[in-house]
View 1: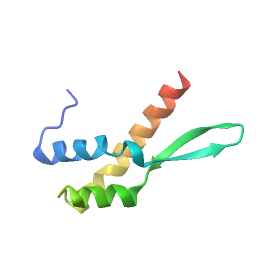
View 2: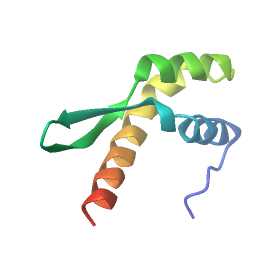
View 3: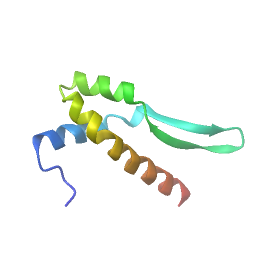
View 4: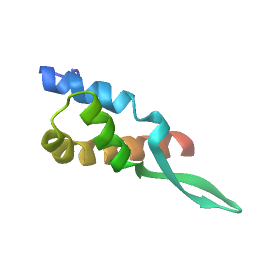
Length: 78
């Protein structure tokens, strides 16, 4: 259903799975940390190292990032 349908889609999926350590958080003190997004500089560098087209990553990754951060926040709130 939500599986990548193209070779480029699979490349982007591999990239997304590799970005777990590149999440930026906000908050601190008494507030719990809230994920706000990926480090896009690191994401683009990783994409380049993986041979993924930078223009494609720049176009698609922000939308995937929004969905991923929203899912992380919802999972935290549950």
